[in-house]
Length: 323
Ligand SMILES: Nc1ncnc2c1ncn2[C@@H]1O[C@H](COP(=O)(O)OP(=O)(O)O)[C@@H](O)[C@H]1O
Ligand SMILES: [Mg+2]
Image 1: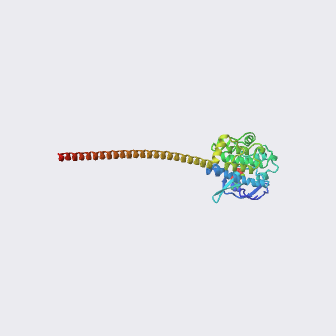
Image 2: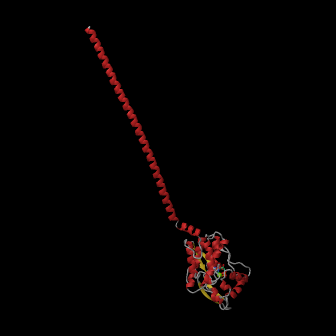
Image 3: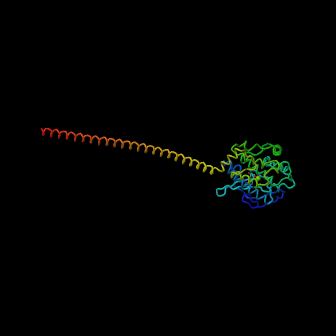
């Protein structure tokens, strides 16, 4: 196996006393849970790390290798040129250690060393090793996702038989209940990945990764049933740009309409005023003309009287002269 998200194993064997051993890359990083929490990473960045984990697991599956022990302590994150790089460690070790032992007896042995099997898949908890396949790792991926989203392991318990009973018979507390800020689609994704029956899980790490990608890109998550309000708000979010442009166009049209309307009103007002002014001016001109006519008539009359009086004077003088 050669993949950037899988720690290299250089050597494996058994000691003289029969203890199996592995020699692998020392990853100078921290478990994924610590890495996320110490940096208070937002959900999208946690999912980015999770996708790297899925890519590593997918690669192993394509080579026919199942991890069987996926859990946060086996997912280490280091930083390479400022970017987080996920490395899955302990790949294939559980299988090699298993030998003729069932997972359950392995666990009861390991319990002494490693604590309780809170990340174990139900088919392993039931010691049905013939049922273990890629979907067992899909469960493990779901359990890691659950933990990096909620900050808690899916199950708790003091003793391993108590934990095993819960793994077999109980549902973990929903992600949303523990961490209300996590979008509800992710609760459904965790639930499907961690389904008790392998047939109800995502059939492969690839399909789980694709579901996460759909979530990140705003597509429809298959494990989640959307209500009408959610469909509408998703539609609004997806087509926000189009809706904003349409709204802007409507506003622009409206503003243009209002402007034209005001202009028409204004122009009508101006026309009325001009007409009124013309009327006033015409009336003034008529009055002036009437005054001029009256003045002319008066002047003519005056001239007439003056002529008459002149004639009268002339007549009087003539009469006097004739006497
Ligand atoms: N190759 C490695 N590089 C870096 N850290 C490692 C490596 N192998 C194991 N660790 C770390 O050492 C601790 C113990 O690992 P391990 O013995 O595999 O137990 P478990 O994985 O069950 O917790 C874990 O925190 C793990 O992250
Ligand atoms: Mg380990």
